[in-house]
Image (cartoon, rainbow, N blue to C red; front, side, top):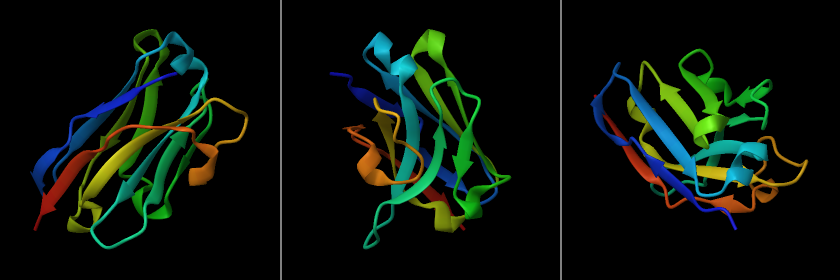
Length: 124
């Protein structure tokens, strides 16, 4: 059973950048679709971005398009989320999730594996 470990969160000023990483514990991780979700205090966990196992198809939340980029390095069993031009509204705990089935995209139930999350705080 694959385990996911996120890293790269932190405190940044508005307009700054962070790169989150999601490392999978098993080689099978490279065959899974992976997504990033986020959850702000008092809010539902929401979809941010997703990438197909091959890296050739990606989806984004409208509000992060043009600012965030999801990518993966299957040789390193790692998926990245490059976040640029960060805004206070991006403040949340960011979670990595993986799907071992053909169902993926922006729906939480499609993902059977979840990491513990990493905090991103954007100050104004």
